[in-house]
Length: 415
Image (cartoon, rainbow, N blue to C red; front, side, top):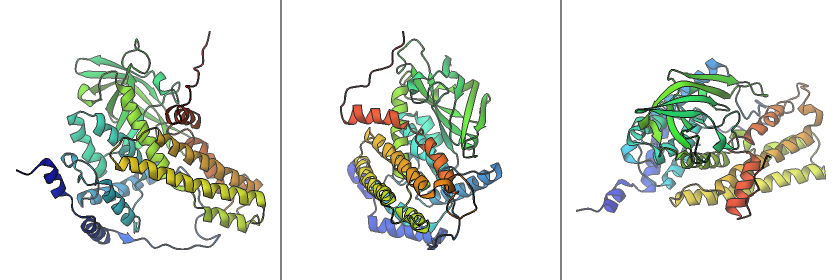
C-alpha cells in the first residue's frame, strides 16, 4: 500500500510541466502585456495610493476582477498551494511563484479587491475556522465569488486592539453582536467579514475576545463610507445592531480571539510589506526623471535623498526575501513581518520627503504642469499606510521587544 507521502508526491507535477501548463492557460485566456516606454510628460501622471472611484466604476472593476479570478481558478491556478479538499492544488509555494511571474507578463484585471480576503481573512479561516466555514468560504474566496473584509479597529481601539468593545453575547447556538468598527477597507463591497468581539468583559482584555465570520449582508449590519483627505472613500465605519452569527461561524475557541487576531495581523503585515501597496514602492527611475526634468539632478542633497531611497528599497527587498523563505519552509509569519511593513512605510516617508524637496510649491499649487501636483495624492495617502496594519510606533515596539529582545515599554498609568 502506498504511503501518504507517496500519494502526495504523485500529485506534484514537475515545475517544468507546471510552467508549460500555466503558460498555455495564460496564452489561451489573456493578452500579453506590452511594455510601452513613455517619456516625461506622456501618459497619465497619476500617483494615487488609494483609487478614487464612483460606485459604478467600483462595481465594474469588481465584475472584471471576478471574471478573471473565476477563469483562473477553474483553470487550476486560483489556489495553487491550498489543500485539495478546499479547492487548492496542494503544490509547493515555488509553483505559485512560477505562476505569478508568468501572469505578470499578461494583461489581466486588477485583483486588488481580493487582497484582504486572500491575504488576511482566508489564511485565518484555514488556521482557525470550523470545517463548515472552511468548506463554505475558502473555495468561494479564492475563486473570487465573494469578497471579504477585516473588522478589527474601533473608534477607541485602533493600535490597542485588545481594548475593543464590540460585544458578542451567546444566545443558545448563536451569538448576538452589537458595536462599531471603523477604518474597514472594502466593507462596501464585501460579502463576509472577519470580526473580533469581546465575549467576556470580566477577563483580562487580551483574554476575553473571540473571532467570528460575519455575513456582511445580515440584518443589522450598516456600512457607512468615510471620506479621506485624498477625496476618496476607500474606508468605512460599520455598525452592528443585534446581528446574529451562528456558533459554527466562530474562529477558534471562545475567548481565544487574541490568537486568531495575531494570525490575521501577521498575514496582514506580510501582505502589505511584500506587496508594496501599488505605487508605494516606486522605482527610483521615475523619481530620477522628475529630478532631472526639474533641474535638480546636480543638487547634492537631492542626490543623497534618492540614494537613500534606492538603498533602503534594496535592503527591504532582501529582508522580505528572508521572511518569504521562512514561509516557504512552512513556518507561520512572525514578528519579522512587522519589519517588512515598517520598512515599507519608512521608504514611503523618504519618498514624500524627496518629492517635497524637488517639487516645492508645485506639490501644493496646481499649475497644470505634468508630473507635479499629481504627487499630492501620493503624499496625502501615505499617512493612511503608516496606520494600516499597525502604526509605525506599535511596529517599532514589536520589533524592539520581540525581535531585538529589548525590555518591554512601560505602560501608561493613570491615577
